[in-house]
Image (cartoon, rainbow, N blue to C red; front, side):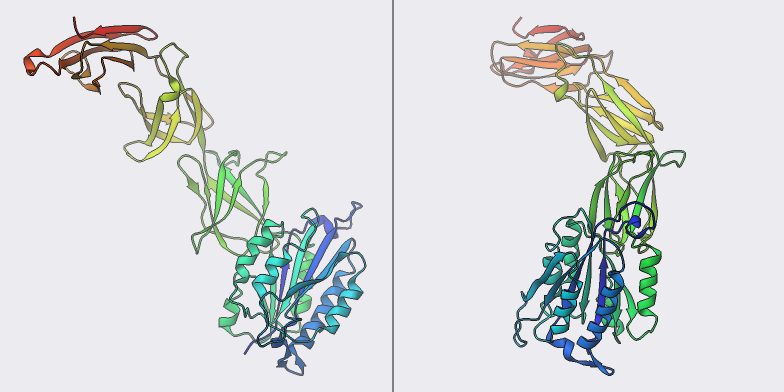
Length: 456
């Protein structure tokens, strides 16, 4: 059996709206979304659901009109097309926002009679467009029997509301809802029993006591001393239960050098991932309606700076550095030469993609310190031959020769090599015998050209 539920979707409320200071109160817009569907005709006690909804609606609008600088609007659904069959698009802004229209809104609600079907998601989605802008304090009060009849999902509509600057902080008041029915509203808000005589006063007390504060949070990116000094990091809020992302923000510090305050939905249990290198994350955190929550994440960082002087034969834009954790082959980042990047404090193995590779192991990153690495400039090798052949470049270090690069079949080739001793092993394709292999030794110096001719 369906029961009446009143869902107060409260959003973007600043503490000063109802403060007693001399500051002018900020404009507050309240959109009432009223259910006039056929299901509201059913009885509950001595009243129909519609009569009970109207009675409670009058109490709420009368209580809100006492506050300064308020504007109201009314959207109704299910009031036009009789059910059956009803119309899942039957939702209309009946009274738009304006000053002093509460009497007209009460009149329209008083004239409403149970008629059509219940499209909750559609109505909430449309309600997001009823606000002229998001510069005021915007909220929605939805009065409904609580049953979506058009296959919609009210939870989905909340994303549309948040995109319009409406941060949802709901209260749900229901008559005799079963535990299963109450669960359908877990993504919508906090449940209150309509039959409890204290329900209205409890909600009013919460609203007044908190001065309609928004649910807020601060993400503290902690340094090695557990101070929230780290910032300028992208972060993602995930619904910890479903695993999907809810918000993406760029972390910042405010004018007082404290983490910026975020006004977000209190419903999901969150896990926050800071996109540091490597990523760091918070524990699961549940926000409290109308309260401020601190979310700490250990994210101590230092800077890796890879330097290479500008030279004739550098081509630094082609050379990158692969960064990995010590003794771990997973690539964390590919960093450009002559750039700086932040990393979580710890040790890293670096593979710089020079010819030959430059390896730097156990590079230590310390809190707020710059670890500067200077990579020597390359030299240029020019290789010429009269005809195509096969061969490669090897290092020439004492008794050990390591492969560097294979030669192509071109008769003229250019390579950019790190300073050192090398040799080329090469054989013309027209000479089919290993005995015809040519070996040429040479030395590469920074910013200098070395020529090797394989036909001499």
